[in-house]
Length: 532
Image 1 (tube, rainbow, N blue to C red):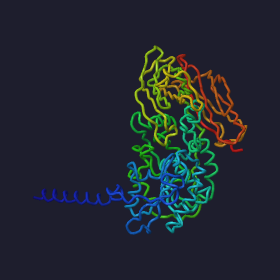
Image 2 (image 1 turned 90 degrees about the vertical axis):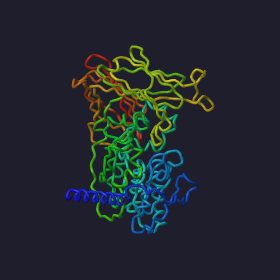
Image 3 (image 1 turned 45 degrees about the vertical axis):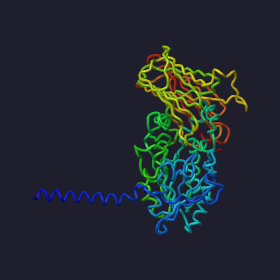
Image 4 (image 1 turned 30 degrees about the vertical axis):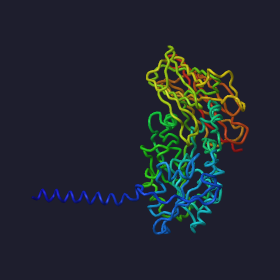
């Protein structure tokens, strides 16, 4: 009898616990009924740069809570927050928040710079605050939207008007993928895809080092609390973020577009590194709401500067882990590249314009067809590209051959870049061997922003299973200056910075012999900011 009573009590407790969980979960999961769609105010139409959208007034009026402003990332539009499975607006509305959404320059199709978007956003914040009769707003921003908001706060008069800024995987230190798009190898492809726009330019690591130098010590930051977060999932095999995740893995944990280290804002409280979230899914409401909402549910009126976390120089350690090739496809393009001995696996990603065929041939002449193919993500720096993948186990050492051809190459007699000619095509190959060979650069100076004509020394190391490799041939392309060096015992590679203010890309190739005498090659690309 006592045992039955105990069991009955346990059942009752379980039911009560389930009810409590369901009630408490109302703020965590989206309501099944969508709120009224946000209404447009200003702008020339939905999706037009400068447009503001206001969410419906929640039950009770929402005046007991802050206004939430949502800012999307590169190449995005405001409706991202309430369409396509994103329930951010739904969650905010049923949690009792008044909301606003904005279209920045990116909504027009071409990405806007941090500076231009920051200036536009600052004006929109003033309008939104006036509409709701409040002195400031709290901002939830995805990806580059967090940088645009940071610029609005510090450089365009929104200081104090943004009380809390919660960033969802914002590349505060730039993206190595943006550096790659401006590299010597990717030039043709990036230009043909039209993705060398102001947004991608802003995300180069050199440009963001300059932005941090101009921004972080400013007193305008003192009236804002910053929160940042990141993801560490790249999505499914050969998915839209797989290429970015594989390339960035040599720089650390990442979500397929932004590394965790880059997502750290120097003044921010770190919220989470979620192993289940990609760069796309971290910006979907139910994936971030429980962590972010407690930090934006009230205004903050603090005094004094927030502590600045001093980060290492972005050039303190630069891995050269890939083999890069790229160029124009004039009907058919062919490239060769060496593989050293002892490679356990080889991943090859080939990014092209639409309508191409890609094959790979090993040193013995065996032909391989691609393992998978995927279109690049909408907010990718290579938006519009086709991504072709090869995955091979224990590939042979020696000379490998890549062939890229237009699907209609046989019918083409000529290939023209001029208006009216056949549409051009191009490719970028990123080969990533998994072996005991390691090559890298490390800056010998502390600066992250440089002066014109400054000589900067980089330590170059190469080893194979712990054995140092010597007689390294180094070819570099920095701005319009090409150079070649032979480093007998590793040592220092001296680079002279360009004599022009701006951001300049370095494309570097290191060649040598592994410990068994097989040729090897590794490539590296980064960017430098020249500010005087």
